[in-house]
Image (cartoon, rainbow, N blue to C red; front, side, top):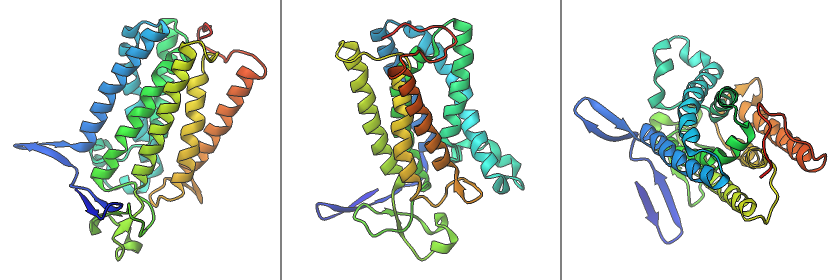
Length: 283
């Protein structure tokens, strides 16, 4: 439900996590959005693969590998940093439909699956991931709305016009008297759409010969751009995974910015190819 107050001021309020019910079966928004993101992402990646001269069927095959690597790792990553919450109720570890996955864990799992897949298929890792990276960030933009329906991953209290209403049961104990919070899911979703637009622009500029893109460029740009937004947005959140006093997502984002920048320097300043399981052809 979105309540409008005037032309500019409005607030968000989730209608709840259930999309619809069929008898004892409940279909949740979270699962529906993930499934939709996968379907849209695979379709887009196959289209881009065809434009790049890669076999679209390989992209479809990798989608299964990617999901098998990304989703369990995303959940494991989250559970490990929230172990105290699951130690006394281990049955909830597998309740992924209730939320509680970490995108950085998913990226790690997807990359590991990609390395194995490319090794077996004798395929360049960087060429494959340059093709699927726009789908990854688009999927993140879609998936963030699962946090909205679950009333989770919100930020500090705020009175801004785009404030998010959080039900009392979902509020942190120290903020039970507060009703409205930063919709950090929305901030990240919009940022991810901007990153998606950048990657698509770069892809087609390279396709048209207006830019000379080396294999790995799109994936490195994704790592830098997504991490920049996530670093600052994470500072608003109150449910961050922590490593002592440090927000894990900010730490990983900082590493993503540094590694991505070093990769671009390696490609374009030193004019050296990135290490790969199979040598890639320049785009």
